[in-house]
Length: 236
Image (cartoon, rainbow, N blue to C red):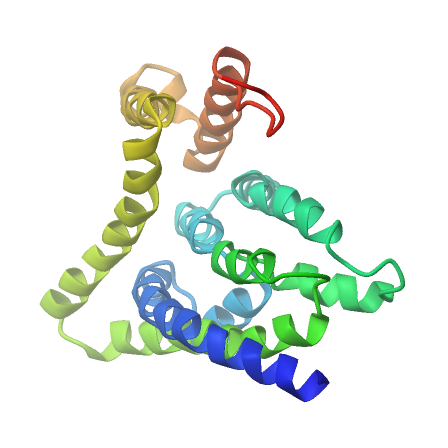
């Protein structure tokens, strides 16, 4: 039974891992511009399985911001995983040991959360371990190989491949924008304010990491106040 759960996770995690590899490869090319080595990129991806979080990390390195700014920006950008962890914690058998909860929590991403929450009954940690067994190495290896490719490929090809990273972000924001007008409004406001913060006197002198933190907290807080998501029990 346990073996079947692990194999099921391995099967479901394989397409996720392949997708991670492609995205991480593009992320690695960007990491190369920030001066990271393949080993540093591998370690960074191994301990931070989040494309937006790593982009903030590598951007902070590139802009030479403080450790505090990098840590805080990454924490805020990855804050949604707290909510996913809370949701999954309700699906564990009460007798599940802490170390299983810890390691499952380490590997929560949007995609892994999706396949885990969709399974009926209690969450079986071995299922998540099977998915992570393929997803984590491919994500980490993709970043390392992207850094290597950024070192050996011609500049034109590297520039073309780096566009894939922006395509990844478009793929993240467009679907929710199409479903929710409030999200669309927040995205447009973030574009406008990000540009304004980069040209306004005094404000433009603030580091890019700090500007990102300020905009993320303010825009998300206002959106939560003005247009909060309804509880599942609310009626229209």
